[in-house]
Image (tube, rainbow, N blue to C red; front, side, top):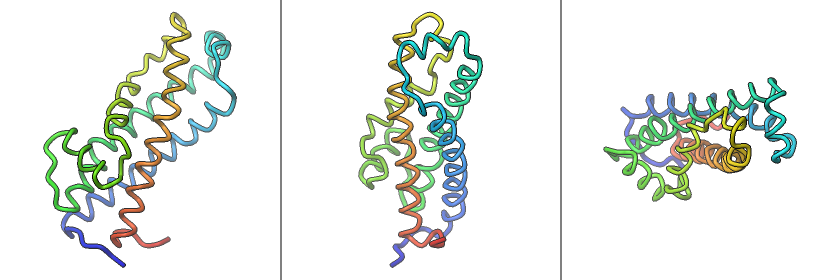
Length: 164
């Protein structure tokens, strides 16, 4: 069963979802490789000598920030407009997204925005703080993946995408 939507908003919503899925795919690769081994304080302290891991963290932070920004600024607003909403601010978008079930906890999503500016060289001076940020970023990344998956489900339910 296809649910109604505003046809003139379909293309922007599809494009926003396609981009989100691509960004999520890139982030997923970095996420899997970064969190493949347990991250503890010793791991963080070893970053000074491990340029490969430091580079991976840079990639993770960049990809996390791009996906998080895209979801909040493009994807969720595009799907809200698709359904006839006209959100005026991030808080409006988040409230609507929470009501729709696309975001389980709007405060958690907004809190994740702070991680996009994760000080990537903090591990050199504050290993404990950086460790805590990496652990928090892991669950925040999973949140972003769930939002993209939820929006894709919405698009499929509404007949916006084919079932392939």
